[in-house]
Amino acid sequence: MVSGTHGFLSDDEDDLVEACHRLGEMRPLACRQWASERFSTERMVGDYEKVVRRVAGWEHLVA
Image 1 (tube, helix red, strand yellow):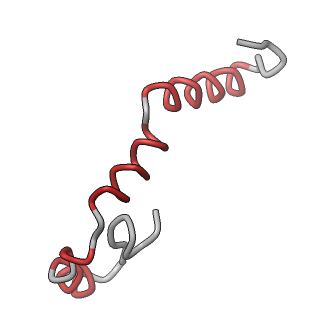
Image 2 (spheres, rainbow, N blue to C red):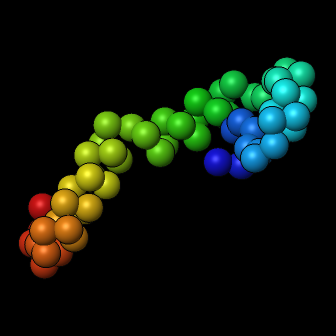
C-alpha cells in the first residue's frame, strides 16, 4: 500500500486523526483497482497454494 494513495499508514494516533481529514484526497477507483489486483480470488488462491506447497515441502510439484 502506498500511504496517501491507497490509504494512510502511521504508528501515530494523531497522524491518523489528521489523515481522516484528508480522505477527500483519495481516488476511490485507484484504491479499488489496487485492492482488486492484490486480493482477487484468483490471486489469493494462487498465493495460498504457494504457501502450502512451501510449508509442506512440495515446491517441486506443479499445480
